[in-house]
Image 1: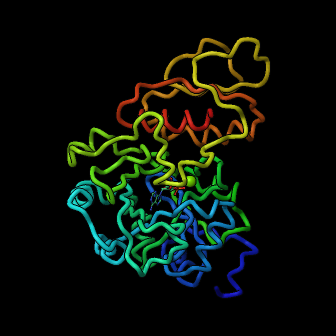
Image 2: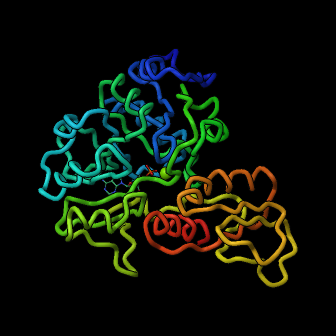
Length: 318
Ligand code: AMP
Ligand code: MG
């Protein structure tokens, strides 16, 4: 890495060309996608990838997702593509779906945490695609937060966690979806949904009917080490419900689609599961800034994005 790029100050820009230039020179650059903000490094730059792990405090056994700006880049990253993987790419790229496939030898093992597979996604956000095309190389990017914290859905949230520790933030709008991508392991048959996201199991099965979900008791952690680590957590305790737990007298907040049964210091009523998903992580952060001790999350039906939403809420409540 170029010594001058050791950050003293995090550059903020709205120009994808400027952000891409910093990445090409060895920088680590946060950028918006339709899911959450990512923290990118060029996939063949092992020093930059090492810094991504360092600044996030990310366990080194947690693999990164490679983000591409052109479908053609899959051929560089994957050593083989199953028929299921091909069908998923045709239907859902660009979009909020990550496929896991056998990796090619050129991909450095630090990027995949030593796994022989690689997660690949092509975001559909226009700014993300403009940035990735300018980078001219696949970009590995985990979410641009300190590990364990809620993923950032605004550039301000990236700054809150990583100011002065990364080279650049490409500033865009708040992310549309607000939850991380669906992850499907296509290196096995039948393909396995490792992480729920905006592409639902029903949508996946409409294209590849054999896709299976993790069985109860199966965590996916053997296949996807990231699932083992604590995730999405505000400092406040998180509970699922519509009212305060018996005897709780501290500062509490509520988010959900129903009117809560008690009075809360902070209250956000959303009109749809989509709006709930888009608001959840920023609400968690707002509660932390306001010294909230307990966040009560109203439950939603587990269909469509509701399944991914309840997955994140349950993990935060663990
Ligand atoms: P993040 O980018 O922080 O949202 O985390 C990426 C998620 O994708 C984690 O849960 C990883 O375990 C998972 N993932 C990335 N690459 C692979 C892979 N090669 N095999 C299995 N899971 C992966
Ligand atoms: Mg993450």
